[in-house]
Length: 632
Image (cartoon, rainbow, N blue to C red; front, top):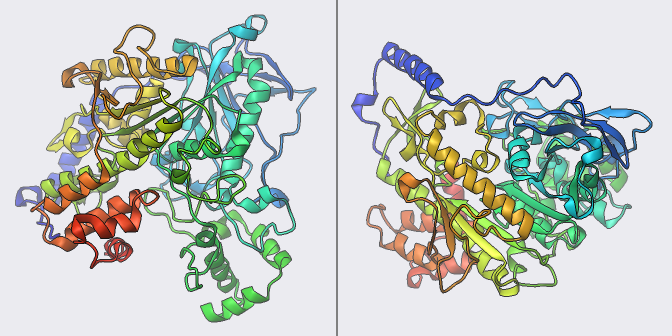
């Protein structure tokens, strides 16, 4: 639709804006809530010595009490010949003692504050391939007082988000959750992007099915859970009571572990925060864009054509195709393994927030089912028999749209002024609701068929960010994507810009909501149900299609924590869009529905798009609508 220009009052002269931004920066600096200072990581904490099957390890005092052990290797380095191979067990370090003082390096990625890397310029290539490490947080037990047997503590394994192309475990501090709730928290690095997910018929050909699967990031997470099974007892954790939890791509990875036969028995509860259940067909991941069964424009086949031309072995795409066809499996394997990280990542473009496009997470039939996850969520042959929490944030999309030039003019790189607030609220609301449909409502309805009484859902509604100058963050961001993570950990750190949402004025409310969420999450980890959070909060009942379904998580100022029936169907949403007269025409309405259908492609997709409204969108091709919008 047409976008009106920003109001004239927003077009101040440069000097005025520089003064305004300086004032805003000062104001925000005063308003932000300081983090608890970290302890000195330079010395081992007395009492942190632990004897593991791989050798002794010492940790440090953690930020919120207890101990932390950082940078423990859970797999052998995936470097050299081990690049694009299934992870292997780490080499024991005994008789030496491992000083687990420093976080391991992030896996290779483009730096981004959204991924937790703030100390170098955004977009800079950073990280190391030798990155398969994890961090452990536990209460401060002396070595001879570590819980044993039935007294061992529940274990919570956190899988970070970031589109499976950015992120690092060091961004998340598990010490407050661990010490306050008597659990052991583990945060994990795993291979990302093209190093974590790549498959081609001429790569890894003579090796086993795990190496050929291409799902190396998924296999890393399974290896980390094997480490937890074998080792977490040394830290007081119970290997028979492990909860996996993750947000966004981390939540998607939780879905994949739920249906992976290789992960069966390695965890016992699962929490999906703002996740989804999407996978790529193997042909999409491998083929060329002009093959009879087309691949993605960043498929492994297209990557190889790019590299062949980049290395001067062909002058154009047609010649590169001939060169690739003549190459043996050994030639392709050698070409890819000899690449430096700089050469490999040179084939991709940072999208502005560090993430880049490449196919990832494949329906390979070995690590994961041969069909999309969403198609097997009601099949007990595939789905692990464990309780599940599924949830989303009311305004998921806003953080992604706020700096989109279609919706806002952005001054000085970070101060947005909306062009059309109605369109912004309408469009972000549609996408956020479709996110919930695809990531919460539909999966809950499927999982509840085989695990009745063991599926719990929530919607997170906190929107008490401050107003800065004329920017009402509560309206611009609201309950947006990823903002619930600090509430789960009780560690309010979303990076320099994200932390502007956390002020002294909203501290009391968010601390109260955070305490409730930590209690619910830990109760679920202990008992397989969030219950009443240990007796202090409203009872969170299982998902039920004929009763209140979702726990609404909010502060007392906005109605508090309460069960609500906040569910709809995708058809309801599509009909509402078709009836909305604020769209310019049916093309604009069908574009909105195309994004909904794309989010829900595994259970609605093109067929649902074409039949909506008695066929009103049938004249349009949903993929062409989306591609034209993205190219605009």
